[in-house]
Amino acid sequence: MNELERLIGRIVDRVNVNLREPAFNVGPYVLGTIPLDQFAKFYAFYGLTDQHPFHFQFCNSALAGSYFLGKCSVDHSVLYKTDVRGDELKKKGDVFASHGMKIPLHDDEMIRIKDSWLIKNLVHNNSHDPESPEEFSIKNTVSMHYANIHGAPVEGCFIGPYATVDLTTLRNCIVGTYSYVQTGELVHRHVVAGRIWVRAGDVFEFNYQYPAEVLERYVHLVQGKRPEGEMIDFVESRKQDFERLFQEFKSESATTIPAGTALSRYTVVKGETEIGENVLVAQRAYLENAKLGRGANVQENCYIINSQLEGFNVTAHGGKIIHARMGKKIFVGFNSFLRGTAANSLKVGDECIVMPHTIIDLEEPLEIPPRHLVWGYIRNRRELEGHSIALQKLSRVKNLVELGSMRFEGSGKECVKALQHRIEHILEENGAFFEKNVKKGHAQKNQNISYNIFQPHPEGPLKGIYPCMDIRP
Image 1 (cartoon, one colour):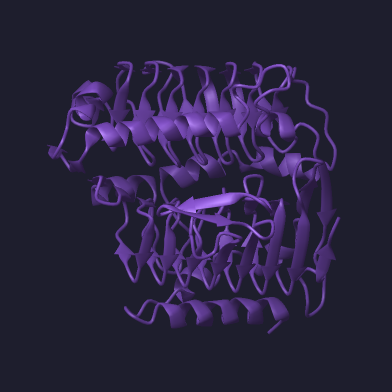
Image 2 (spheres, rainbow, N blue to C red):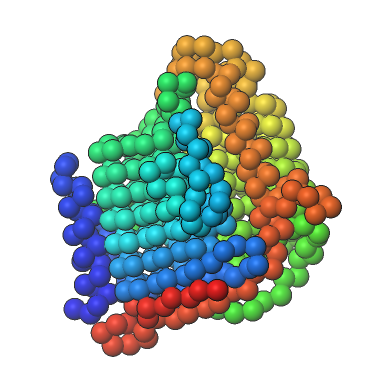
């Protein structure tokens, strides 16, 4: 047994201790998922800019193909093709507001990952936990393929493939495949696969549950096997384009990059793709015959294919849009899968909000009217009627509304206000409103990044393990 095998075994043991009630063994989901030879094949890399404080510390870890930006520390962990993007970490002197209290930060915030296993994950934003405002921690956690850990410290958890933990502190929890949680805090909870759950204290709560047969078709996980389903097949069929991209240390894009726009050199760009001003395209995004209007953003693991985003669009981490025309200021939530075809195209009206983990897989052309909230599984006009509501109508809800498997309780007005506020915040953070050196965001701050690579031990008992490094300004 080499050091990498021992490391994986220790991680499994530590997570299992945290999940002993109920007894949940992460071993069958981890062991054999990634062939051990893969960990020595890919370099890891980190970005340097003059816009972000940095301190990189890595020890006793395997980091194959992973990317880091901002202040990050990784110890005794396995990260495989995971993006740790710390460009929204809080800084020394910032004031963190929570529950009516204002907490000044003594130091820059840092992402600390310890005793954890993250496969093709996205880690972003900053800690929203008032108990640890200066530390975004991921500890004793197994997080599977294409999960998002967004502003969400987690400890002792199992997070299934394509799940999203958003602005929610988790302790000793299981989050099922393709489930989404934004609830503030959860302890010793099992969120079943396919549950979409948003709770804002006593103000409002949104719940939707995917049917088991839909999850079986699109993404599911069986012990001892890799995740399966059409979402996995969709990504796997295009992975060679990314492999070619990562084989080149430097590459020049043939795409015209206008003022105020950042296009990562680790983005696949194919066909007749046009990119407007103040656009952010993150690493591991995929563009093919895509038109991105002013102020749009395409985040990690997003795919825009044969589609147009008219402007000020937010495509959150993992969103996929195929054969669609998206109006202005449309939000497409985490890991949503919007797939039209040449014959059955999708058109979405201005200011629509597509809830995280929405699946639209069309069997006929479909147009979604402006200013609607959309969720769940939609294939045609009839199903759209049962999985959407006008924002104006939702704003009038004061107690309860139910549509199929969706149940909303509380103030619709406050829900709409919160969603719209978050969209504005994301656009501002990403630099969509930049003009004449004012309102600079990620699209401007990430224009000039120096990528630095580091490699693991290629052979011997430490094969796949990276040397300990402490990189400071």
